[in-house]
Amino acid sequence: MSFTLGGSVSLTPAPSQVTLPGNYITDFNFLNQYLPDTYEKEFERYGNRSVSSFLRMVGAEMPCTSDLIKWSEQGRLHIKYEGVTLDDAEVAGQDDVVLNIAGHALRKGQTVMVSDSGTSATASFKGIITATTTDTVTVAIYDAAGLPAVTGLSSGDNSATDLDLFVYGSEFKKGSNGMEGALEAEEDIKENNPIIIKDKYSVSGSDMAQIGWIEVEGENGSGYLWYLKSEHETRQRFEDYLETAMIEAVPAEANSGAIAASGDLGNKGSEGLFYAIENGGNTTTGSLDSLGDIDNVVTRLDKQGAIEENVLFVNRALSFEIDNVLAEQNNFGSSGASFGLFDNDQDMALNLGFNGFRRGYDFYKSDWKYLNDATMRGGIVGGAVDGVLVPAGSTNVYDQIMGKNAKRPFLHVRYRASETEDRKMKSWIVGSAGGASNSDLDAMEVHFLSERALCTLGANNFFLFK
Image 1 (tube, one colour):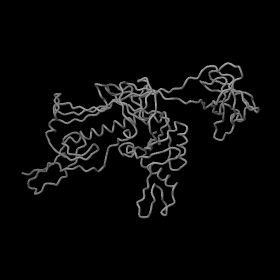
Image 2 (cartoon, rainbow, N blue to C red; image 1 turned 90 degrees about the vertical axis):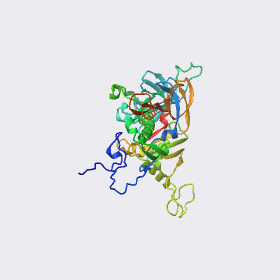
Image 3 (cartoon, rainbow, N blue to C red; image 1 turned 120 degrees about the horizontal axis):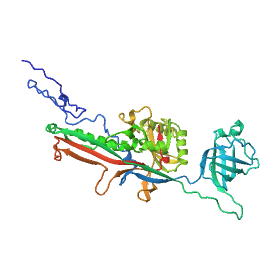
Image 4 (cartoon, helix red, strand yellow; image 1 turned 120 degrees about the vertical axis):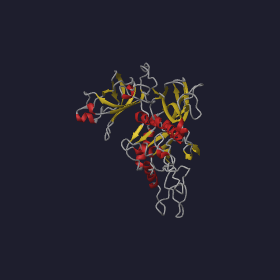
């Protein structure tokens, strides 16, 4: 009689939550003098696999009690209009001109400066508004030469020329009446809604009877775990999703498939970090491989909130580009490199990286693992994100729900919570195994749930590098 032994000795866990022949050592052949040596400690071939840490570094978490989070942000203090066009009847030399500005808030008596927005244009003039309609303003020009020959006039098509206009003051005669109308402060009401994130781990009671230990050094600490290592990884993965969902979430558009989804699936979405920056912040493509590229970022920040300190969270490629640019600014050592806050010598290890620099503002640089991870953003080619610029500190906003001013970090997470229910990070056990006794299910299920939203305050101060 002969026997054929199936399977093979394998110490590799199965990717699915089922018991397979390869999960256990089955080759108990007593004719074999030696049993295999096994390592009870798991080898971390990918290092720390978690990608979360970004929001922990730059933001805070605070509770909320509503399905909707609303806040108001200040608008611009001064008035400027772009895309202004001349009425087709205007010609060079006129004393007053009619400008087309749909839905404007300009008033008679205000003094304005109008300039040609073309890249090579130099024509500009100043004048005073003498009449207004809903979509036009009449401007009397101060210069005796009248309307200069802007590009549209020379081409014969005034509507083809985009002009810029901004208000710099007003002028009235002695004993005149006051300004007609009033200009209300501009407010931008922002809102976002929390989404419910779930996950679950399940193991049958029979499988739980197979006891085994393994030593784990992972993202949440080290120690010996019973065979429920998969539950440990499910929790780690869920904690990563709590952050990546806040970064990648997008709102569901009207008539989209997500809106039409049936059953228990969520169908409203939320505004994540990337979406908020793309729709209300600054997005740039290309590289930062020259000082001029960095200066362009600084110039743009000047036109926004001019936040003094900013943090760059970047992938490896963009980090190297910034390091190389900074190194080129201080290249006088005998070996061709002398940057850093120390005196390099030939026997000293050279630090080829920078953690921060000042160019108009203070910038601090940090590698963002999420953008490097091959299973997440690091594996994206089309639509890849190379980094984000996040303003540091906090800002004052008017909380529409609380009805008062509040000081908040530019980037923070709001989670649903009350005195009786905290949905920041919930976990509970269901079943009749593993210590649970609240169901007739012959298994143990570990459920995870969180309900949260990301608030990106002042998105105009953020940069997305693509």
